[in-house]
Image (cartoon, helix red, strand yellow):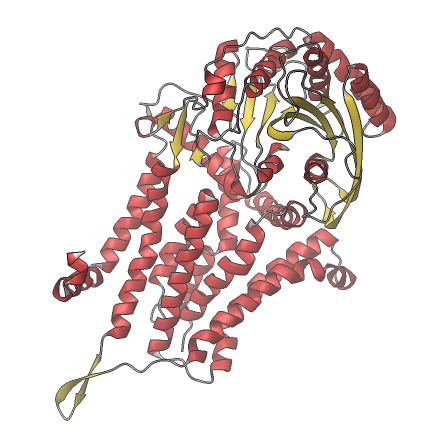
Length: 615
């Protein structure tokens, strides 16, 4: 504190930070990137461990042996699904009732803001079927959920069959202390959203649904099953939920512990764990796994039905069966025993999962990176914005030197007018509001005047508005009427730097991956931009490091990491699909990535774009 309270020392520190501002910023940026990439190196990570005593102290013996029966039920379900042309509601109701469950149905409908061309749907109507196994040894105030989505075609039939077989087996056990809900939902996430809103008596997405006739206790945890083959070679754990939310790490630890106990191959991000961490190949494998998690978390979408449970503070994960060319094979009985063990452990919980981490990255299932390890990487990038803002603040307060009659005198800098700063800020945010609202509202007009579909109209309108924002400097200068000054752009940049620092900081607290990716691309150009730089070269650099191009880069990087590289044409089509899916996810489930980019990040970027063309 003495360093800051002493005027001489404070002046010396400020002078040092101003004089070495650029070298310090470069070092911070490189250090942030190196720190982040070093997180995948095993000695820098922590070994996973079970924090919840109720799940770690009690051993369970798995006795499920109805794997063949589960496959038979899957075939029956497939036959009735093809006969009904969709969800076989009556057959599911009878099957659950035959297993002693209290069975209920819920109908729902949802009109999409524009057609979802990926799944070819616009007006969605469906029915959820769920059965409740009442706990015989408890007051029925808590519940667990096992869900299996009814997917089109032959997908996920085995998951429904295994769910019914587990229901029959669980019905004959007496040790349950929590209600168990077996849910078969139609139309994947939309059906799950309708059921969750009905269960919790909320309506936050405009969904139309019938009220639930049967309820259990407060839901403590949920598991979603995705099995589409009679024989699988490994189980993949999916954790990423809506807006980058993750379940408590103990849920992942529980899955990994039972995979180790039963000798089941388990993966995360579709990648097996390697033990050669001290080799280049081992590090690269861990880095790729961690980067895949970062990219999937940053997009803000739910990568499985479990992702919507997290919004209601329900710890949930999806387990996906993978049938690859590996020699190791696992039958439905082994999968059922793994699920039995996990449910029995969760049944022992005395309170919600809370002892372990909620913010983490996983380079493998046996190692994790906690928030205390990865946040410094973001902090090193964010501090660059504060250092540049400090440099501008010092220059704005320093008197300018001017020669009068041969004598050098200090002149106090003139303060810029309010309109000088306020006008570009307002215009930038109005452009962001247009980017957020107009694509969906103008789709009908675009379809009438251009030969495009509704989905193409929404995406192309968004791109057109985004591109039109590049004309902002010209329009701003017309409104300023020649008021642009040297002090004006410095005040505007100071405001924009602090604004961007706050935006990225708040984003990183909620979704670290999104905040870090935006910081990596936005910080270098925003920290260095001035009106005195070469216009064409800097304009090209700003466009290439803009939010839209950041999304495009993430698309190509993701395809490379999943070992499915694409060319420019196919990558562009995936980019358009990501934009449409982002707008849909916001409208259907409340994803915050699209409004964040449209209403805040893009307008902030436009403010720096205006600085480059400042007159």
